[in-house]
Structures are given as structure tokens and as C-alpha cells.
Length: 404
Image (cartoon, rainbow, N blue to C red; front, top):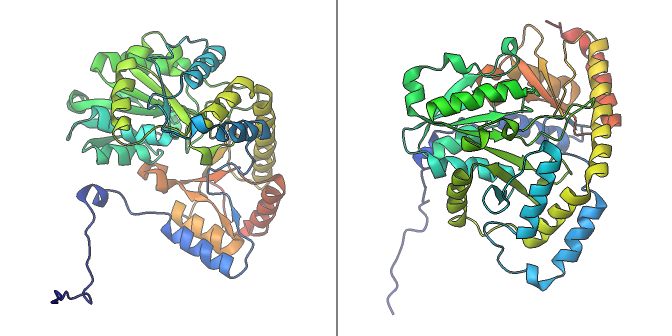
């Protein structure tokens, strides 16, 4: 028998696709490397970088998952459009929370976490060379989803002088002629800024005028403090003709790993997104949908308890920094603090300084886009004792810094 001989000693290399080459370098790679190095040295690292709740998913939701997971009827492929019972719960929750009545059959689309819906949306409505209006700084999937669809991101600067809202009036007419989609995100990650209903009114008028779909990422709508409740863009007249809105159970009920969310709003846009998804995924595990239904139906008081914990953390951290002379505003919403970098540092230099001198991880503003330079983000997703320890370390190193 004759065997063909192959030069197995040669390494086969595969080049990344052009769409991957467009992605910016992973700016957090050096931070991750440094963190691993410090942990290997048994250093006590405090991670204020990741936006992942440290609190457990409430037990009544876990119990609902366990019960549903034991039912063999939930072990099969899920429906692409989601279980009718879950869609009804979304509909009821949305009406109670925002006083907006949705059609559960056409105006609600369950998602495997809002991130996948956001990233897949451009595939549904953006052709190569179409423009997508993207805030800067921003949650990275707005940009990467645009690139994957062959679209061109046009950055809308979020500046402190404009309360971190985009100035829609400065977008050039030739850009608007090619624009198909605009991403908005309030309460905002990373800046923690909030938007008024009046801003949403202007955005909806703008979208009608220029025939643009608004994709509003409202993942942090339920993380508000001091009684603040963020509005939905769908509360504005004419919004459902030009808008869809993304919601998530991740931040509301500490369910980041569960991957369950939903999009609501314009029925045509949701059907197009659903068509993309039906070619990519096979729906959400039904036991997760039933647990999410339980959370929306019965989780109001538990959610309020979670908010109290974050508010205490916010007050502790913000007041601690203010006592040291740092310029920091208490956020109305999200569990992030967006803080000016002291003079003499870039955001990346400050991040490395925090790591080297304090073993604290913070996120550089430029990791979210060029307009994030000059700021850093702190995530309040560690217990109060760890925030107190972080403040102690910052105070001990305070002579290194000069507030702006």
C-alpha cells in the first residue's frame, strides 16, 4: 500500500479576514497581561474595570430555571421568535414600566443577550458602504457590527460640554444621505450620562427627516439612582416608526451569563433582525426564557434591593474621591463612574499607574473611542469593602496625582 507523503512539519497559517483586520487593536490586552502577572505574584488585585455584576442572580429566578430545565419539553430547539409566554411578559413589563403598549407578536423580539442583537442588526439593514452613525466613546459592538456588515461608521462625538449627547445638527448632509442607522445609548456606557425625553423627541424627528433607523441601547435603563427612572425612546410620538430599543436582564437581575434580552419597537426592523438570527442561531434555551419571564413578572422588589446596593457603593466611592480632591460627578444611572484623568497623564498612562502603584484595574476612556481620551471608567461591581480598600490605596498614592 502506498501512502501519500505530506510535509507535516510545515505550519499552515491562516490570514484573518479583511473585516477582522478593520477592528482596532485590543487595547485592553496589556492590562490583561499585567493583571495575570500580578495575580501570579499573589498580589491583591482589585478589578474595577469589568462591567459584570458581582451579585448573584436572585434565588427565585434560579429556582424557576431549575424547574423549567427538568421539563423535557424545554430540551428541544426553541422557537426563533421566542416563547409566546415570554413575549407576553415583556409586553406587560414594558407597559407597566414605560406606559407603552406593544404588540407581543410583532413588536418584541427575544435575544440571546442584547449584545448579539446589536451586533447582528447592521447585517439586516446595512449594505456595504452605507453609513452608520455611531457615538464616540461607545460600547464597541456598535462599531464592530457596522464593520462586519461592510458599513462605514461615522463617529458622533459625545462631549462633556454637551452633556455627552451627540450634536445631530453638525452631521454633514452628504453623510446623512448615505446613513441607514444610528446607534444611541442612554443611560450611557461608558459615560453614565442620561438623556431626556426631549432629546429623544429631537432624535425621532431627525430620524423621520433623514429616513434613518434608530437603534437605542437601553441596557442600563433599570439601573437608576435617587429615584431616577430613564425614559424609553418609544414613549415619544412617532418613535416606533423609526426606532427599535434593546433591553437586557443582565444588569437588572445580575444575569450577565444567562444571555437573555429583547428588542422592541419597529415591527419591520425587528422582522429583518429576526431573519438574520434565524440563519445564525436557534433561539434561547426555553428554560432561560421561563426564568426570565419569572424575573419580569415578579422581580420588582428584588430589583429595588439590588439598586440600593449599587447606590450605596456609588455614594461611598464618589464621596471618597471627592474628599481627596478628585473631580467626579455622582452618576444618575448605570454602575459606572466616568472620571476626568488628572493633568499630566493620558488615560492609558493613568491605567498603568493604577495597576503598577495600587494593583487596581480601571478602564481607559480611549478604549471606547478617541473622544474617550482624558477620562477613565470605574465599575462599581465589587463589594463595599473592596471599594473602601481601593479608596485607601488611592489615598496612599494621592501625592502622585493632581486633579484637573
